[in-house]
Amino acid sequence: MKAYTGVLPNGEAIRYVDRKRWLWLLSLFFPLQVLVGVWLHAATGYELWLLLPFVSSYVLTPLLDWLIGEDTNNPPDEVIMQLERDRYYRRLTYAVVPLHYVTLFTCALYAANAGLSAWAFAVLAAMAGLTAGLAINTGHELGHKNSRLEKTLAKLVLAVPAYGHFTVEHNRGHHMAVSTPEDEASARMGESIYRFALREIPGAFARAWQIELERLRSRGLPPWHHSNPILQSYAVSAAIAVILVVSAGWPAVPFLLVHHVFAYWQLTSANYIEHYGLLRQKLPNGKYERCEPHHSWNCNYLLSNLALFHLERHSDHHAHPLRRYQSLRHFPDLPQLPNGYFGMYLLAYLPPLWFRFMDRRLMALPHVDGDLDKVNVDPKTRASIFLKWGRDKTEEPAVTDLP
Image 1: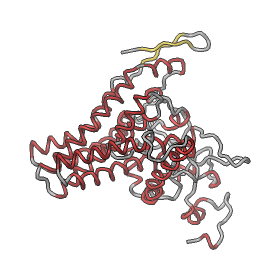
Image 2: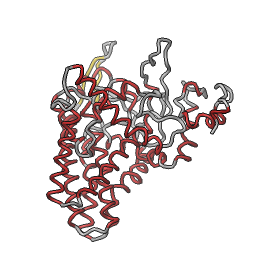
Image 3: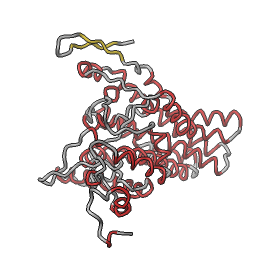
Image 4: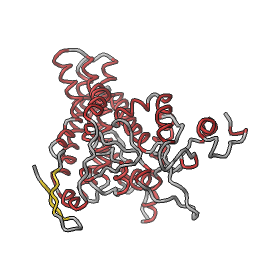
């Protein structure tokens, strides 16, 4: 296995081996798991096989994350530059892009021609959409890089779920406003994932266009200029839709609608858990403090991190947005999630359980220490949250604040 060598400040030589090097190949399998369900249905006729991606992602992966445990292995600073330059890792992200196209076209054509029942048709579209949520994650990894190739690949893979505005919104919106009340992609304490989705999905779309229009105006260009990266990705999405309608017929239209909704829901699920309740403090000059590692929830569970290109090491990502996934590091004493992302998604889908479990964990964080002034609280639930958590440290809400 390939080793990287470096020298510590004291002159001692070190040797680092990425024990996950070949395990990252699993990232090529995850976009294809829905095709396994399609193959099993074609072989047996049992439509329940189409639910395989849901079972593997939401049942098996959280269970295996719990059984295998956490991976806290970090690359030393002295070898990170070598690790970043190793093209093996970036080639994996390149290879995943066409796999998402294979998955979408195969599933759409199969759904239109396999004589599925209505519920099985909807299930296959939904499962393909869950897989396309991984396409947004791949676009996230690629879209943070500066090379023209990777930025182009990001636009292409984001075209699969028709979420071409993501890179603009995420890089120039979310990363600037993360863990503040102004950020549509940062969930607030007391805000359910369902109310968050109603704020986050349209808010991300609007903010992306606002940011891009400002960029174009500053250059004296019209909104529909060919250099608009949002339109470039949307154009590919439109071409995909036309090709599918021509080749699969009108059933491709409801298939794509369900597919896109479930892909967006995957992104919303990730955004919801990544910064829930965490708050950057506002400074005397009116600006927010710099984003620190404790402004993101982290987890180091092996399997789900392999599926998501280390997205779960979210603190280091926000500290070093250009850093490639294989170089992201774990830090102790940071906000930690008790399971991988897929397990936490399930908990988030049950708001009473989420609040009961995560609010306690949020308030117990060392930098919060039970102080609601250090928490991003949902204004709509502020009164009830105060009654439970804020008697000692927060100004009591006025009668008009009560529901």
